[in-house]
Amino acid sequence: MKVFFNKDGKTILLKMIETIQENKDYLSELDGLIGDGDHGMNMNKGFGMFGVEINDSDISFTQGLYKLGDLLFSKIGGSMGPIYGSIFMNMAEEGERDAAKKCRDDLQIDLNSFSAMLDAGYLSLTEIVEAKVGDKTLMDCLLPANEALKNAAKEGRDFSEALELMKKAAEEGKESTRDLIAKYGRSSRLGERSRGVLDAGAVSCFLILNAMADGIMEVLK
Image 1: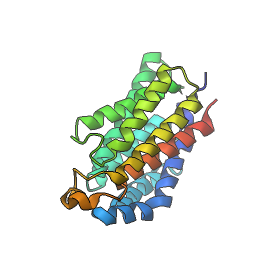
Image 2: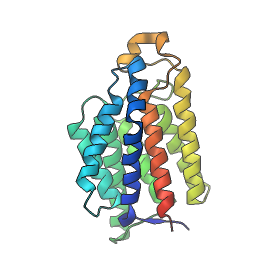
Image 3: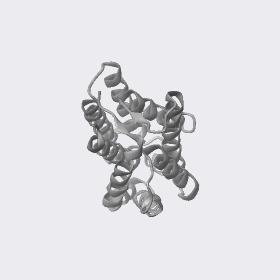
Image 4: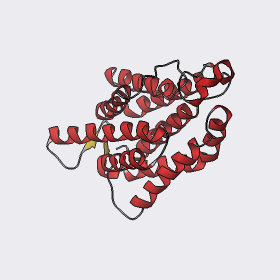
């Protein structure tokens, strides 16, 4: 059974940071078509600050997720700070609970553990937002990705295969937002005119999940 060690998680975190930095202009461009145009800038600011904080330190995957979430929640404006802050902090807390239950410091994260972490992040989000699949938000990406990962875990799939299925579901969910009408945020004022453009939050969610999956596959043992 494939696992990765929590202590090796900095590789994953750095890949997430790099992905946001590389796509900051694209995310803001998308957001500017039907929103405020600051999504890429805000995301890059938060992930950039996080990158500076962890640059010279050894940090585990769960420690890093919590630190990133806390930073986004407390220092980044708009709706995305609290949204991603909640996802990452609750993912981290679920991982730490798993470590406590197993009574060990060198936490090994397997498919079931990671699926439980992502599910915790998703469930935390349902408590602070009303958006559902079909409302043209990051939920259109996150929910299908979460369900794909949970189903793969239940079916006993290989960890790498499960991550690829998660990535595929996330991409399909992201692409589905192009044909939807926005129901939340500034873009909701546009009504039918919001159709035909990808939702920037769904795109950033896809990019983060994709980077997270690729990072995990690099450290799987």
